[in-house]
Amino acid sequence: MTSSDKHHAVNAARTMILPLALAQFIASYAATNMNVAISAIAKDLGTTVAGVQTAITLFTLTMAALMIPGSILTDIWGRKRCFLIGLIVYAIGGLIAAASVALPMLIVGYSLLEGVGSALMIPPIYILITVAFPDVKSRAKYFGVVSGAGGLGAAAGPLIGGLVTSAINWRASFVLQVLVVATIIWLARKITAPEAQGRVPRFDLTGAVLSAAGMFFLVLGLLQSRTYGFGKSREDFAIGGTVIIPKGSISPVWIYVVIGALFFLWFFLHVRAGERKGKDVLLSLRLFRDKVANLGLGTQTIQWLLLQGSFFAISVYLQEVDGYNAVKTGLMLTPATVGILAASAGADRFARRHPQRWLIIAGFLVTSLGMVLLLALVRAHSAVWTWVPGLLLFGIGVGVMLTSSVNVVQSSFPDSDQGQISGLSRSVSNLGSSFGTAVVGSVLVAVALPEGRPFAVALTVMLVFSLIGLVLAVLIPRQSADAERSSSPDAARVA
Image 1: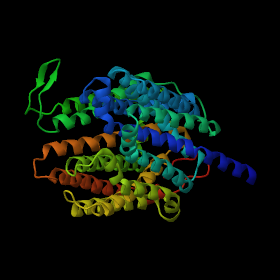
Image 2: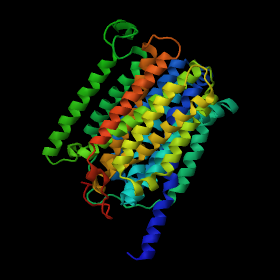
Image 3: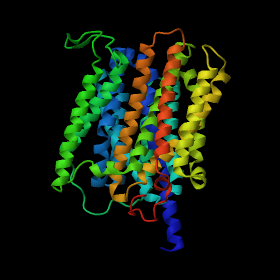
Image 4: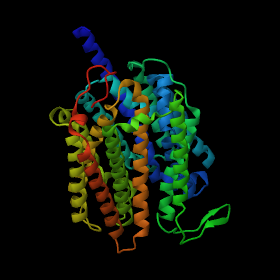
């Protein structure tokens, strides 16, 4: 390849970053912006707050359950095509949601179609970056851009959603999403990237159903912990008016978790049998034999647990204890958002100067320090400045390690495995996010202490998880995590 050809290839790769980053932003935004409009939606559609919360929960469940099947379709349909199909499905869902006249219509548009669209468009984002930028350090820069966009979308969701809902109405928020998606589709015309080489795999429908069912029940169980708790059930668990589990008995959360585990066991047996017969399977078991990737997936799970769990705890604290509205709450989270963006913007520079493993370790240390400062400085109705140091350090820490963890995981496998590992990576991120909000929600309800104390306990629990993530980061082998892949996208895994 001549110098001119290389320059053209680099420019072509860079042109796809903007649409990919915008897609990650809008998917993360959709997961958090609805929370501030629940009451307005319920009133407008003639339903209950619980009904709208169900729609939000179903969106999370749909996206999480279909992430792995969606990633496999990138190898069948093609990476760019799958990305565009996901965007189109998402836009159709947004239009239906904006025109909703009743809760079922909102569920179809938002919960189902936007959830399916997200599951189709998110995995190609990370696959396209991985194959377009073969070396770890260049890839870190663009993973940083996309991760920063995701963090910004999650953090700014309540603020933007609150502003749009207050200034216009909740439907305008969906219209805004559709306009952004239309822009992404237009920008994505110029995306050029190598497709997966070799035979197109057969779609493992049985594996897709089993993995989706397992993820569905597992995430549903975690989300139900907000209502019933993890230990003794805080309320009667009834189906069709019949009490199945009375208040004070074991939480029904574990019923969902056990059902999910059984589906995953069935999935494991199905995959193992398929691999022995030489059949195409949804997710190869050999992916779990890579120590570096496994530890990277562990740190990635905890990072999203910390991000969503801590944001949830802080948002509820600001609204319940300090009496802030949704817009002011979003503004108060600005230091964390700035920290995430600043760290993500420096991902390329950090990767050139420091090993990926070191960056993950440093990220957990800085995040932990931010939490300690929040616990030490913030009190009920305390001044705004007491929030700034802790939130800023928290955001910087998360921004530093999110990019590095994704880089470690994606770089551990060749181009031919990118479809599978990208779906697995996105699934554990969704699982971490769900677990984070579930744990915090359960703690806030369960801890019967004076004003503000439940939030201190919730942040302390998040701090413990941060330290667990730090241990996993330290266990990542030095040479394996920090070595660069060769210039070929099909090079052997980093080891």
